[in-house]
Image (cartoon, rainbow, N blue to C red; front, side, top):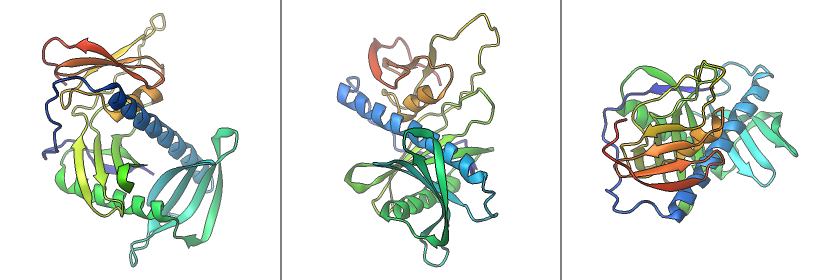
Length: 269
C-alpha cells in the first residue's frame, strides 16, 4: 500500500529565510507536536493495513489510505477515487479498539461510502501532491509513505517520507512537506525537508549499545517535523543531535526538542 515515487530532487523548493536566532520554545514545541502526530499516523496506518490485508482485499480496490485522529482514536480509511466524480470512496474502514491501540477492527463498506469532508479533501491533497512530485522530480524509484495532517486555517499538511525497506533500518532524509488548500485541490507551499537519505545500519557488535544519533541539516537552521518522527519510530530509542549551519538541537526519545548552542563550521549533509 505504498506509493512509488522518485527520490532525487532537481527542482527548487521554497527555502526558509536565514535565521538570526534559534527557533523559540513555542516553535520547537509545535515541531514536536507535528512530529508526534506523524508517528501516531504512521503506526495507525501500518497496523490498520495489516488488519485490512488479512481480509485479502480485491485487487484495485485500494489506491489510497487516509488516517484520521478522532475522539475514539485513529480511524484509517482504505479506498479509491471515483474517476467520474473525483470523490474518495472508502472500501474498508479500520478503527482503533478502545484500550487496545495496537489493534484495529475492520469493516467493509458495501456499497462504497464517500466519507466526510476531511477524507475528501485529504484524498484530493494526496493526488495533487503526488502529481506535482512525480512531475518535478527524477531519480531511482523508491517506496514512500504519505501522511496527511490538519494545518491551520483548515488547510492540510501532506508529507512524503521514504519507507522502511530493511528490517531494523529507519531511513532519515529525502522527505518533503506540502501545504495544501482546505479543499485539497491547490498547492499553497512546498518544501524539501532534508536532502540525502541516511540509512544507518544498527550496530553489529552486541557488546556495544548506541546511546545517541547525529545528523547534519543544511536546508534550515531548525529541526524538522520528520526529525521528531524519526526519533519516535526507530529502535533503539535514543536522542538525536541535529546540527544545522548555525545551531545544534537535541531531539529526545519522547520527541521533545532542546537547543544546545551554536554549531562550529558548516555541516555537510
